[in-house]
Figure (cartoon, rainbow, N blue to C red):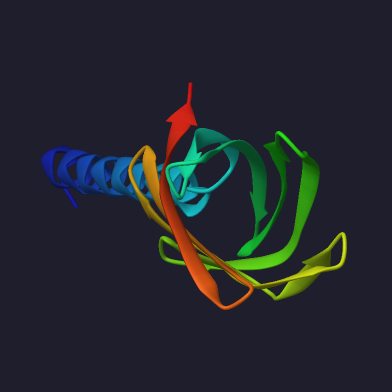
Length: 125
């Protein structure tokens, strides 16, 4: 193999290595789409701030509201859809908390006492 052939082969490996590292970094960055602080209004009435942490497809967090802090546990995220299991808070049944992330915006639906409450949260930077 000539020096030119070896150089071309090394160049191909270098480019391939850079591409693989870039893809891995990109995958890592987008795998954690839910973590962080989100703020907005639910049902045009309730101002909330949500702090979430995503870890390997699981999501946990806390919703800060006027009536107190509400823990969110055992959530799962698939692609950009989040779903928390039903839970009870202060004797009230919450059937579902769902979120759909689109960049720095999250559309949220809270199913509470048979009614859907929707809103939009924005990522706090």
